[in-house]
Length: 235
Image (cartoon, rainbow, N blue to C red; front, side, top):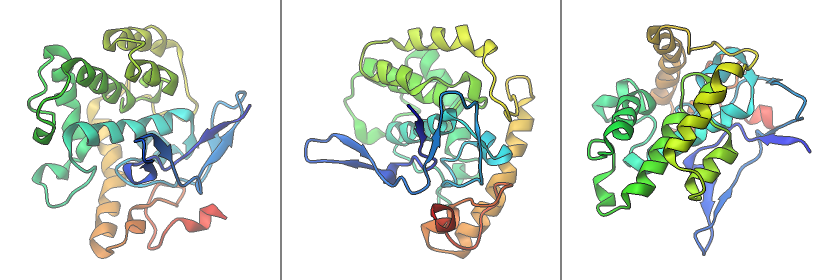
């Protein structure tokens, strides 16, 4: 049974029906991957802000690329902020980089005041803990430290605790490898930030020059944004 890697998981591609059941939309960029495949080498596409930096820099796609994007969606839900909003001062570093230390602190202290969107007001603390744990692990710098979506589903479904998720990931992360990974686990934090900056700078310039969402799409093999949309890769 082949797996489907969506390649453009983002809030705009998750729709709700009348019963508030989520449906993933827009499979125009999706790729099939067999269980025997360690990765798929492909032209880099996706929406900046949701795009897995490892995939963007290497062009080697794995199931963990979608996991990163889903983590960004979770951070959006938790914080009420968009991945890149040039009107916000903190957005110079991006939502994920801004949120990471707050996510870690929230898991350690179980205090979510600095992280959670004030509009949520009264929320279930245990459910927020589960969401924060999933978001934190999904956007891990290194793909091999991200959970499987089946693990995320177990946590959000109440069948696995936040601490249980962290233990499961910690027990397997050192033995899992993904070809093409830049292995940020063993790299200094500055290396990750430098790599993200390689992607961010041209993308933000493109966003400033063009009002359409397509300006934030990547289609070049080096992860640089084109002047038009990535529809060519859909064909």
